[in-house]
Length: 143
Length: 154
Image (cartoon, rainbow over all chains, first blue to last red; front, side, top):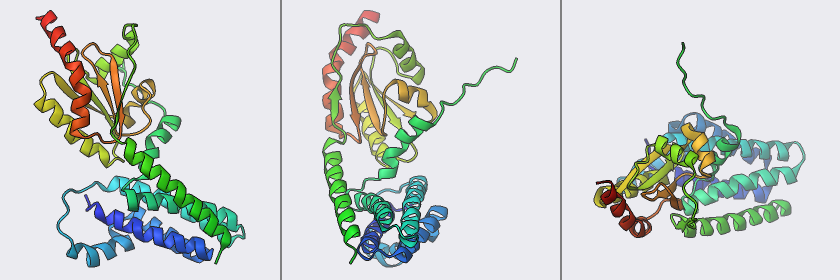
């Protein structure tokens, strides 16, 4: 369980970084953000933006009114990683348009989370499962 | 300065803002499902019963998933409405483990709350976390019917 303001702070930082990626067209900056996404998805406690939030921001705020589970945060970071990785490949392999489009998806998702508190990946998750997932097989008696 | 990035990023921010505003405005709004003269299809009645919807009560049938922060707020509101309003029940279903029901009942996002009347007809649906007032307003017109049905049974 985590303070929900932490991921929202991280989304705000991500928004700024993705704007910088788009304005500079820097594949290396996109790579750095991809690494942050990957690390946070693998272990939310180690996420650099979360560390900044806990050491610098959280002590100045009151206690959180509610806590949120980590699974949605990790899922959202994994989705962010895919877009940042595609953006990195686009910029570094000489296709800046592909890089910019992928970076814009990551920017839109981070922006929606930071400003509206809306998790786009979580919104689309059920639609994705609906289209791809098979219904769970019912249990039947063995005999 | 990368002009391509500026244009593509600008379009993305505008689109995201529009989506965010529309989403915020629609969240929790209960849309009435038009009444038909037809009886409830038996397959749907079976499905609702299997999901745990009690007959003879107005039921707030909530679809949730683990990846869903507003689902918790929705649970609090619906459980509270069921606790304080006689004749109202709250049933929560994990959408991921019941994809068959999700498809059959045309659920696309969590949280979605279906408002099932005492006769098992789906009278309304709301996507996103509704407020207490929105839930009570949606449930109120259905309650006299619930009372009649209970009297018939008694």
